[in-house]
Length: 510
Image 1 (tube, rainbow, N blue to C red):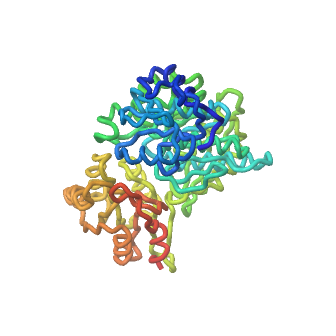
Image 2 (image 1 turned 90 degrees about the horizontal axis):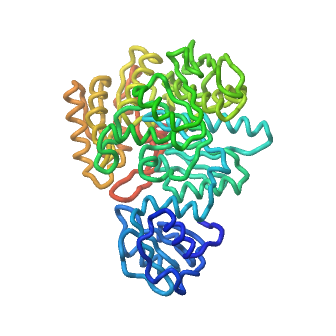
Image 3 (image 1 turned 120 degrees about the horizontal axis):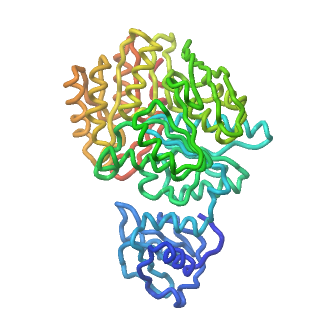
């Protein structure tokens, strides 16, 4: 992470000003205080000459710090005293390492979000699709102006003009986010669309970041666990923090918690609403139709400052009426950002989201598999509603799992939904991490069975999908939620390369 030249004394000064500095060894005014700092990282593999190394993470080990010092770190920042300070490497102790990271990032990079048109999107479901909608809309607008693509930062994929990669965090750590913003600006990119997670908002990953426009899509119970949010109130409260980061924002009149939303929205200077059921919304969607998997609707926009009133038809490039809410959010964000509506129409028509409601068919077109990133109660319920509309009377088979160590409520919720709606469930791995994959699957299975469903457990995800395909008949829809086009499984503390669900389906659904 290259940045303008800083010194150890600069780090000390900003941490003191923020009230986070506890002590330093040796003292900053000693010989080490003038050492030049060329980069900041918390990954010892990235450490080199002139690095400021951040000691953080549940799996942090002292040997990582020693590796960083050996590689040339000139200081390290930590909550814990390791006693490794020397004339060549200063130990800086802080009272909150997570809160210190945004301060360090801002010290190195400056207020980058103020230089880049940042679009932030939060909600229990739909963040990825809405982020991709915004990317297609912005790209259409920028291309017409002779510019390149916009940047995107999502739980699926990151692009900033330099980095082009698969992602495994919905909202990146603050140092990565500043790297993406810096790369985008150096690449001449003016806009970045990004997913905003409750974890990112609650645990300091977005401190100091300002969004030109933000969207609150919906809220449902999720991410309740000892390492995420202790209860729903904390989860909802974290989501609502989005408004305090936005110059302009929009929220959905159709989601729960309207009183809390209206109150939280007071933290934002300018707010509009969107809805597919309430005609009083600033952005209203109606006359929704779906034919052959192509969704159309009319969008009416009115009373948005400096934006002309609109009442026009749009067609979505993505499958399913499940995406209408996301399209309305994208239209509202575009109005707030001043994107002409013609580019909203073009962008939505061209849009696709890899691994998001992707439909695959057998060679004769009769057997159908749908790959998606759906991973919580709201997204599962929306899927089954969409399938009932698009494929009435078809049986549904599902291959799914739940992550280890977090969001424990999903095991009951998703197991119950699968048991009620599916003719057969195959329960498998989904980033089980350090938890026993068999125990996770058995917990899910108990709820599938309690809801009246039939099931089997196959912990290897590829084998589970192959088995499901072998059981399909021409009247079956196979639903593969959770992983989309991800090519890694978290097993233990490592991310292991695996074929994506889409890859497996394309190979075996012939």
